[in-house]
Length: 118
Image 1 (cartoon, rainbow, N blue to C red):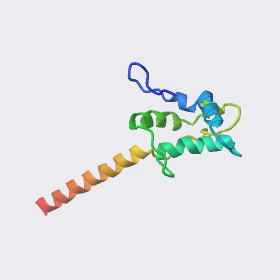
Image 2 (image 1 turned 90 degrees about the vertical axis):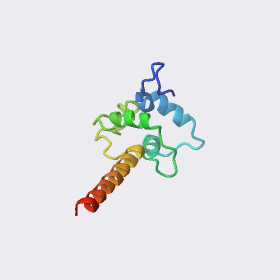
Image 3 (image 1 turned 30 degrees about the vertical axis):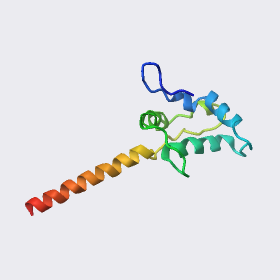
Image 4 (image 1 turned 45 degrees about the vertical axis):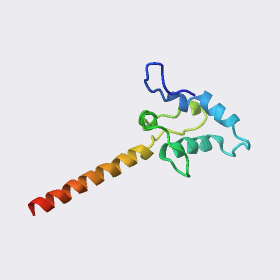
């Protein structure tokens, strides 16, 4: 599924669509016992780069997080499961890396300040 429009804009709703879920489900060699939860784990695994999964590109992650943090059932599970109804409270892979980088900048600046003025 393509997440980029011809204008360059990112559109990630398709990742949470019924079409994407069904495509993912058909691609499984062995059908999962709980397919909805398995799909949820796959999406969140790529979002957070868990279990050696390749993370989504930064712009897709940022846009997808906007949808996942809403307290709404994912489009692919409407009427079937309550996945997404509480919203995603975790942080994405790139979001986490940005936080680490900000911490490094802050502590380097603080160390320089202490060195210069104390």
